[in-house]
View 1 (cartoon, rainbow, N blue to C red):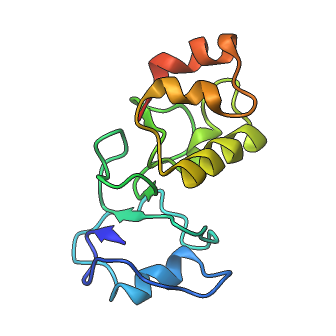
View 2 (cartoon, rainbow, N blue to C red):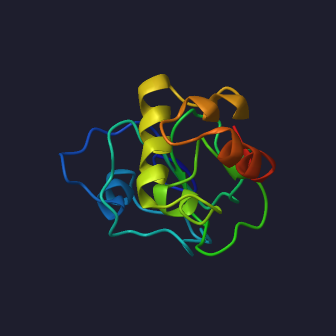
Length: 140
């Protein structure tokens, strides 16, 4: 947990824990934190980082994994970070549905994140054409 929380850091939570549980474990959010777009009911995955109150995009989180509070649904406004976007945010990209979005999240979990956009080619379901469509829309 990082960003605008009272006690940032790594927390161990029980299986099935939700974003709201992680927020409580981090002592809650600091005053003025924007929680728009943060699905507090979403079940967490192992190794995930939640960044509270940061703008979405490639520079939103320094860690290799995670999701970003403040990202919404619909068309992305700028490059979508392969290392910080949730499956729901990845699903908004053209040609990416829920299954492929989960493959991207699984790949970054197994490999410690994306070091470059070119690694997207290694994700199951990303061929040359889909990669060419996604390349200008994503960042590591």
